[in-house]
Image (cartoon, rainbow over all chains, first blue to last red):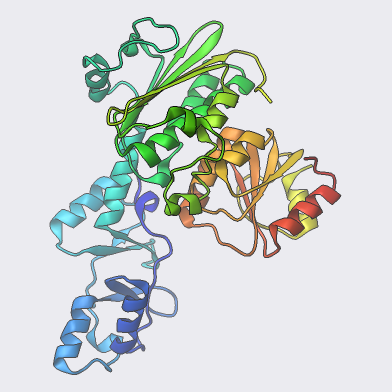
Length: 301
Length: 110
């Protein structure tokens, strides 16, 4: 993973002829704790942090220019660096942020510890096949070991596809469903079926992230006649499944709705896309959704 | 119709993606579930949502281009993800209503 994937591209910087008082205002308004200083060609020439501002207030030189008071030998990272190198930088230096520069020392971004953490979390969400954890999850004796649709014992370790929904960031929702779509297409499943499966799985995955308050998993079995998907979580569960199935009924929080989720259509959408669907839930014990998609059919109206 | 032709005729700004792809249908909406349930494959989507998840919705639904209206801006992570998924991102200062009307008038089907 390269640094350009984790860094913040829209970095706020300041010119050297500004005053520390102006910097203080930028830090306050933008709610950040440091600013790289650049010259007219965007070359990095220094950095000012909130510590410098505190010292300036104490020392009575808050109206001095940035140029006179900035840290000049600023530690920066080249934009060709890898995530591993970034982590080493944070270990080596105790700074909270590093400006990222191109080959000509021009500022192209900034990276904080939080950016690194978010990148690692995103990466974890993408680990979906053939790792140690897969076996652990799949082999543990579980509360839900039987298929709801067929009543058969479900051999989850024999799943053709497995994805662990182990993130809580709503922005990542759909990673598993996207992976599943690519996986189905690579296995020669027709485009229309793959689309239905991935839309329904997307909704189920999003529900786990928004509502369960826990992690979850997606299992998919490819059969000659159909695709079988099971999405489960161990979260707080649904109190009234029938009510939850009703189109337009939603318990999503406002911040989620602002992003266009939580319209109360998820379960209804899943039912429409699949040919058979069962939702099982017990309050406090999580939710299991099983869906069957007959291959080569159009979605229902 | 090619996305590049639509962009040119409607004066849309191209932010990223392959504009030589063809789209035949249009859809509009800001509720992701609604869009996923109604969008046809090879569609252009008119919306005011710009957060990164619209890319997953587009990729899953077979939407090839997104038009962001009312002069909203795409966050950098949305652009990075769209480039990765091959989704074309367009933007405009016009409203969703106006863009939908213009798309319809040049022959994009519902």
